[in-house]
Length: 258
Image (cartoon, rainbow, N blue to C red; front, side, top):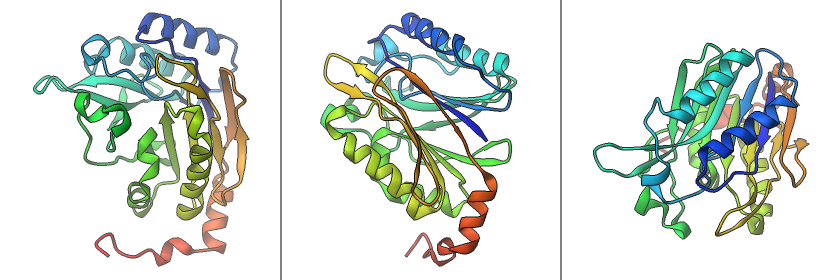
């Protein structure tokens, strides 16, 4: 599987400007059909708690934008989009995946909301994980703070996840935690991990990017510099299956109720 990790500089609460930035980045990128394009958490708004200003319906402008990218590149697209619960008025911090035909493949809602930003006051937490079938690869998406909770990843591993995708607005001051935890999730679950972070700054924090792709053995096989960039990586099915066969640690997992 070919993956393209799109490490963008997100303009604060400015959807149209973010659309332009993404289009500019993709216009300079060769995208092979059948790829998986990945964009950061809340990719068209930034990590804003201003839900009334940024939240969209399931078929809103951001969904249409990323669906169109999927269609014209004949690829899967996974992106962070701010949704909203029409009943409670609270937001949903979502990772939405689109198939190459532009249809919605799946929608994951962030399970763990970041307390230091009072995210839980403005967004409603999801309660489950999902597995996406992307050309035969089982992909489990997660969002930012979820990375600190290994049980989420273990549950997905029990269900056969091959690739974990973590989209984020992870601040520069904790970059070492980001890279360490991404490698840990890969090692303990014998799976590929793609961490796609933003770069730049918002009114509250600075972001160093450091998007990376980790192999099932924990090796960093691709890492982005501190700038807007598209990080490419080729994931090898044979390498995944071979490592799990030679070192079958997943067979020794305890039941979920343990």
